[in-house]
Length: 316
Ligand code: ADP
Ligand code: MG
Image (cartoon, rainbow, N blue to C red; front, side, top):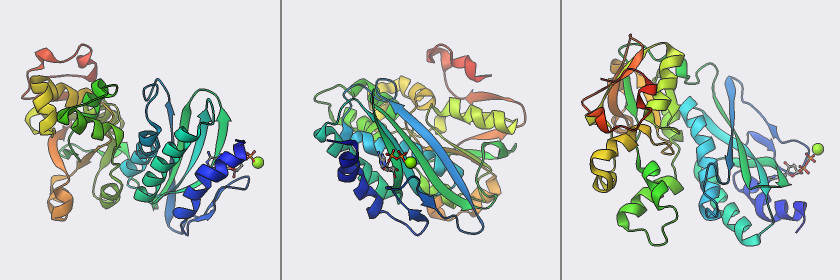
């Protein structure tokens, strides 16, 4: 199968299905064309997944398409951007029809679910690598940045943490049990908080998506905003299945494991109080921004935390 047959068969259909008024020209020419409505900023980001680094060897392409677009779109969610389209740079060791149809199907599901049309891409031969550039828009000047957190703001997360990290142990398990399957869903099918991100524009003072673990990612907000944080260990949301599997170690995973793609946002208490109840219900308050730089964790026994933990700052 030639490069162009491959594109036509597997990827062209993803362009038509989700074409929007903002994507003026999709795949097939030298460039795609996106029209930015007046009063909107273009928000864009690229993410690369390399086999053996970001996903295991022989990872099913039926998960990979969704996962690749979800991970990339999660950055749009963190900025409060409305997704529009994406480009796909695909490097493949071979043109395997089974692999390609699984990947295209999974990518197509994500593309429809997130409302993002495939605008174009590049197809090359080499070690399996997927790069996705996502484009979205946000009201001019209104994107939520990492630098806006202020002392007194509450720190919130948008869902349970740690399960995707716990799933890594089960990726090669041929017959995962019910608890393992609950973890695996969180790894295979991350749900970027696109709608919630947009609803928090003008409300949240800062946001980041949690790809490397809450402590590591919150630390980026703290540095960009020149503030500190106190986290309340007892308030970190975790799936009951995670706690059943890992007991005392669950909190370690929830704080330090990545791959969940929930958002961590900071928001002034009076602003949080005025949010619609259905939006408030999606935000778990886990701590507070403080003036003194550093990150403290209150209410946990840290003796069991993994080595290198104090890399993240002052822990009490
Ligand atoms: P050029 O040589 O002009 O850079 P290419 O030969 O790389 O163009 O690609 C031809 C067309 O096919 C372009 O419009 C490009 O966007 C599209 N395309 C290539 N690979 C992909 C892909 N994996 N998914 C979607 N569109 C693709
Ligand atoms: Mg060209």
